[in-house]
Amino acid sequence: MSAAVAELPKVHGRHRNKALAAARRVRAVELKAAGLTYDQIAAELGYANRGTVYRLISEALETQTVEAVDQLRSLEVERLDKLQFGVWQKVMAGDVHAGSLAIRVIMARCRLLGLEGPSVLGVGGSKPQTVVVPPVD
Image 1 (cartoon, helix red, strand yellow):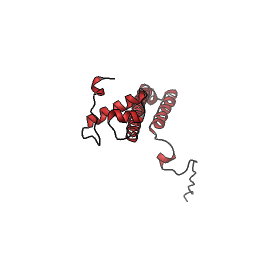
Image 2 (image 1 turned 120 degrees about the vertical axis):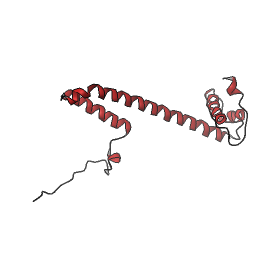
Image 3 (image 1 turned 30 degrees about the horizontal axis):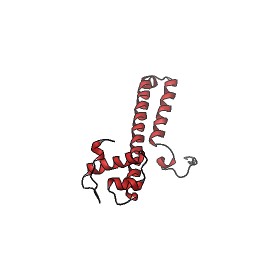
Image 4 (image 1 turned 180 degrees about the vertical axis):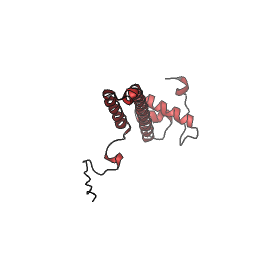
């Protein structure tokens, strides 16, 4: 536990200082990780009740999870971009094997970014649909 974080003032009500609020959220997560109960954390940090502490910790963990997923997704997109770039000249030269690899990379990127499936394409239902076009006379 750092001394700067341990000496946070106990303030009841909403924070006007966003930096202080952020430091208290971090401290709440640290205390929970150390095994304190929500009631103990509320008392330690000066919150009115454990519900506030529970909400703060839940939001902090959710935000951290979302940020981690976004970072991982960005890293994977970058990797797929490099793979596609690496074979693209061969694809343009007509290399069938490279073309197959490029298609798999593009499909992986679409799955990763959620760019596939009926809901994205605006097609109702999960079954493929057949469109019948009458012959032109």
